[in-house]
Length: 320
Image (cartoon, rainbow, N blue to C red; front, side, top):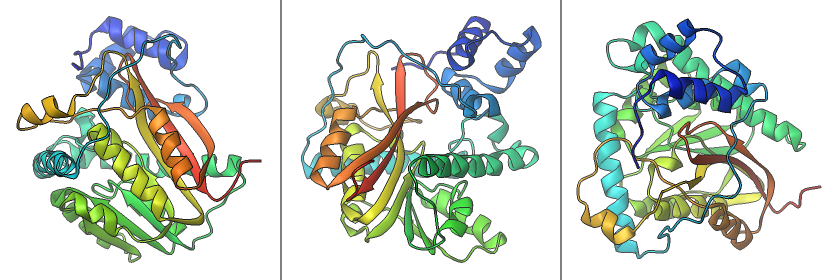
């Protein structure tokens, strides 16, 4: 599915969808066009704004048609999909490590240092949203337990998770991203994070028992069968009372996924976006004895026709 380049009309439409209003001025539109090149980048920028985080959400019509997605595949195909994705993200980690995490032009190589404060602070804001989800459901982070962060990247959120748990297990498929995460965490004197390089899909089954699972803007870059496998493994590893907090697109108008055709198409290039419908997530919850505490539409994708959801799930507890 294409991600169209921006123009003034698309910027204005995005403001109406995200904030229910027009942009403040033509200068604001020009600024967004200067720093963003695609609708995905614009959506991420608007979703990170204080105005959006204080209560505005994007919406989508409720009468869109079903989409066809292959999810149940064999282990060989799953392994091939994982390795293709890993290769792409290792290359991105080598060439554009920060931009590949948050796709704003300010985070490109050569520009990152002057804008790095905003990049790292965005991780603090993501933690604040996580804690708000928890607080609405009577849960507080105590500084104990083990958290598994999937897709830790360069450590953008990892550094903020670290004081909230006894141990943070930071997993990523890109050794290049992890190398930068290690440098960043060491510079900050953070010693309770253990970095793990996911080399192949067999390592999913080696995830340890955990008290929390955290993953934001990560699952969406994997094919649907891989997304489902990762969520299932995470829920299966939760201890009783453990929590899972993750974001994933659950619908995209015009999207489809044919597993055979996907693998036949050959080498992957660039950042991909994929979907796992909600029904599969609810099935996994039932299979692993988990309860849905909260699910909210979010603005992490920022592309017209896409719906992304953030889930808060707990093992062994029925919501009040």
